[in-house]
Length: 237
Image: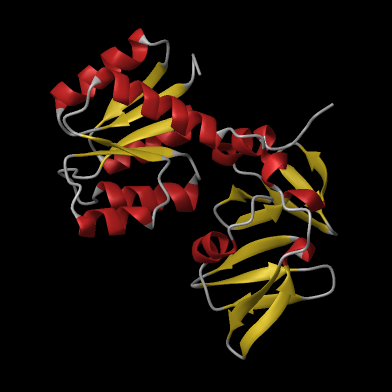
């Protein structure tokens, strides 16, 4: 997808600039190059990239895997890991972060561009195609045990320190999971993160006013970093 915006997070300057050269030559826009996780988070907020190329082994306080977890929690921006480490333990750790793909070092130009294009297509796959038609009955772990829910009836999820609320029209349930973990465990295509503290059911959104949306009788904020992704998942006539 030409003109897609890509951020490169790589601590080897030679590799970083080689990636930049290949991507620009193929028609992509490189929004920045950085080797520090803190700078990466800042650039994600400022530039809202469509994809991040992320080195697993960064010479910093955070590894690429640590940074990926922050990206998932705060931005939900798709990313590809670039790594020379493909041992079983690394693959296991990486799989928990749900990357859009892997590119092994040393890479070649063809593999890199194919990996980038496939990741972008997966990330932008029309949302409605994946929405199941039948209600999904699942159980949520709470302090009182397991409580059955109909996932179609969820209005939104809300962070509550190390726990998370599931909000319904007539009740709310406090799950024994963080918001991030609950979102991953539910794995429902109609759920969309709009803020670090909120994940909404797209089917229940009634109105969007500026940087807020109405769902049920509640108004929720849409963070600047999540707004573009949210708008891509709804159909505007």
